[in-house]
Length: 357
Ligand code: NAI
Ligand code: MG
Image (cartoon, rainbow, N blue to C red; front, side):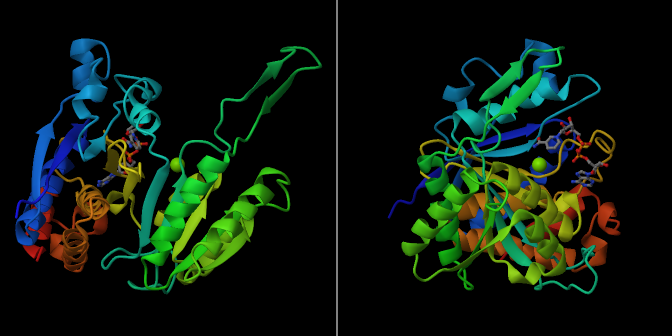
């Protein structure tokens, strides 16, 4: 029986992206071997300052042909603010992927890991384990609006929230499906229909309609203000949390912050239909302050690889990586410096690869 071979576009980018990527690949290869997954990596040097220096642009004109038919994109980090403004590097690469590959889901796990002290008192591994699902293409982040009568007393600005039925329903469907696949089968919706009296009641209405299609999923909703408080006070209440672009943006930083360090947090920018490749990348950036020292924590990159395998349908391989991360973090000597250990990037990556089973 011939099995599908996945083609992955590998883009390390800048700074510590280049240092954590080899560890991500090492662990993916180990998990692929153990679980009989066939995967092929194509490496690309664009979306980096080095490429920009040579070519005067972040990516080749035909970037879409080069990576548009891969099964997924495994991305390090981009940006080198001392040499190139962030809006040029990010908008010239990563933002283009998100927009032009219609990656309308931004997905982040919120999970308290062993060996990572939580800023929330008294929480231990197992207590916090949920997902934040953010709408990634419309909502509050629209370009509809403008400024009139500048520099006069009548000066005014306006920017409109745009919610389409297509856009709202597809993010809700993704979130409900995710909730349905989890043991707790519980979805929480972020709203603010008491204050934002047109778009947010519409959002609530679509949640209610979608919930009818998922009778096995329990759901509730909170206004965003109390919801942020409950992330801190009762993180154990949540399983899958879905929000509009703005609310999801806030929750997807607050959630991982409640579980400790930025060095281990992964994320996916997902086109669920698979019309385009999805991007899996650590939450952190290129960290110029520690780049080149070999001390970057590779766990965010590695965990992003686990999410990528799960997205591709290789659930067992993905799960084995997350478990290997947990076993590695439990040993102080295998952790990197940011987590109080003394392992370097490579030693930590090798430890995770060895733990995969
Ligand atoms: P950053 O995430 O690169 O670094 C923030 C702080 O966290 C630094 O002190 C850094 O040393 C530390 N840190 C980050 N990742 C770490 C890891 N794996 N291990 C240990 N320590 C780690 O954010 P910053 O400094 O604001 O941005 C640097 C550059 O990265 C900028 O050009 C920014 O635009 C870009 N950036 C790119 C992102 C992406 O590619 N998706 C995301 C965030 C920032
Ligand atoms: Mg953000």
